[in-house]
Image (tube, rainbow, N blue to C red):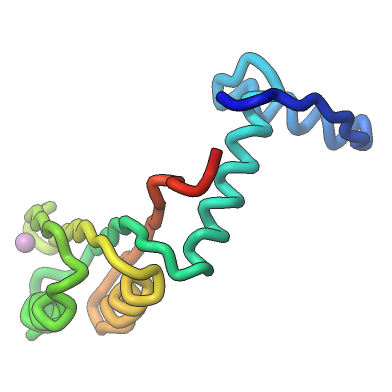
Length: 138
Ligand code: NI
């Protein structure tokens, strides 16, 4: 860690109490570490905007019996091959499949594939998580 700088923050008592309760539930033992993580999380989002490379995970739950859906999902991935690192398919139960796609690329490219997948009929759930290594963040 670099030079530590202390600074004062003014907060309404009620808001601070809620913050303390929230970070306690998450397992933090002090406010400073919780605040550092919040600041880092905010800066990671800014990195996306600067066109930095991100890693992304798309999670899909879809209807196994939906006509042509698996083909469309696979086809979309073949068309975005340069961004895809790995795909795992799990047959959840008789009716449902789970697919987890791990990507690396520009935030816009990763988000675009997630949007295209989400728009397919028969998709029951589609979520996208993105992160960076935080290279430019302390
Ligand atoms: Ni399956």
